[in-house]
Amino acid sequence: MESITLPVDELKAAITGLGKVIGPRPSLAILGNIKVERTADGWIALTSTDLDRFVTLRLEHPAAGPPATILLPYDQLAQVVKNCGRDETIEVEASPETSIIRFPLGNEFGESKLAFVPPEEFPVTPRLQAEAISLPAALRESILEAMDCASADATRHVLNGAFIDTRQPKAHYIVGTDGKHLYSANSFSLPLKRSLIIPSRKFLGWKEFNSDGEWQLKANDTHVQLSSRRWRFITKQIEGNYPDWRVTIPDPNAAKTHITIAPARLDTLIRLIQRMPCHGAERHRTLGLEWKDGQFLLLGKDSYAEPWLRVPVPNVQAAGPEITIFVNRKLLIKALHYGLNTISLMQQDAPLRFHCQGRQMILMPLRAVEAIQQRSAQPAPAAPASQPPSRPVPPTPPAPATKPMITPPTPEGPTPTGSIATLEEAIDLTLQIRDKLTDGFNQLRDLSLKLKSIHREQKSSVREFSTLRSTLRSLQGLKL
Image 1 (cartoon, one colour):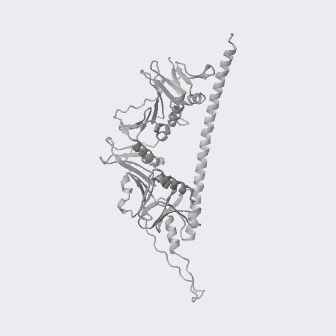
Image 2: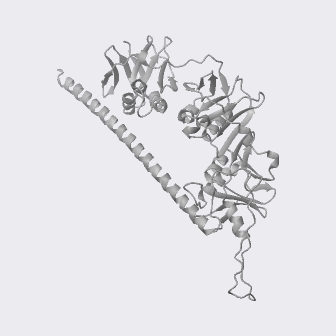
Image 3: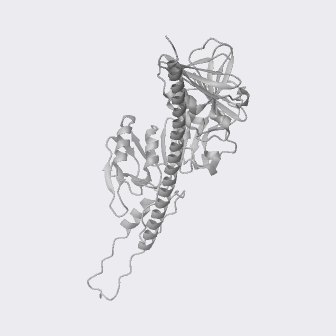
């Protein structure tokens, strides 16, 4: 069979991208292979898959030669490419018995012989018979931001991706949510016949894919395709009915307090937030936002018992009633990182709305503010001097707490009752221990995968040394 020449410079990026759909332990042996294909026109393409997703790279330049298809194990190909220089090339070919990878070895070529796998066993790549839709850079960015806000909970499968909502013909939306925060973007219209859910995948956020030119989208009833100049990604759509996300969006006219940060100062504000003290760092990452006495303040502390540290934020435009509200700082930083520089606030227990030019993020508040209000409303009563010491003074009953408009996802901070506060701290400690144990198990799993990868690399190195020894023996037998 004719050989196919592959430039190592392009293969190094190809191996990274193709590996994003090949797991450490493929469910089928065939899924651990890369399909290398040369068409009748000379174009060379490499494809990997896990049955649900297909990633294909077309090399930059065509090469002379007849059509050919070769399957190569991903691990062995990756090892050869890793040990070659960017200015070198490798050759691959297959016979009915073996597949061969030839690589530079000094002034000679080494060979890695592998078991032959019939190309017919490789899954067939779906072909979407639909018109390609160009996605501008802003729309592509909105899709990635929606995926970043999507849920990672496997039990909420329908939320595990970006929802393109086309139910309003003149105003399509891209939506992503995990139940604690929701992202949406509009101001565009796509020629799609129905709404669809694109699964969140690591490949779509990969730097090389995002810098490879404009995206184009194709969709049919079951699959969706996103392609750039040389890369193509095909995946199954998420089936199911997406929840009615519009019911969670607060009425913009109900917001009374508006805070606007200059876009040029968002990075400075993010760095300030990252330096603020944080209690409940394992779970809530609580941070307060306060508009009071004409100043916008950040509130933070290291523990529940400490007073709040108030840090003013300069050069902020704000208007409306004074308000104090608490949020998860990780989600706050995410909203600011997206460039959503206007914060609209309604009540202390109502969702926050971050927005800018058709994009918005809705965050659920935390309830630390309730503890502050109740503590400030209940000063310790002093006994009057004229009253006998044996007769206790009844404490002033606290004002009834207002029922939140939308129940926040988690309680935060101590309550005025000591026993309840102690119980909540114990519950928090239990949850922290659980999270740390989970992290430990995840680290053990990652360590196991790394050890297996090292073992595979060692086996590959042993084979390469064996090939090198065989080559040296053959050279020793040469007579000049």
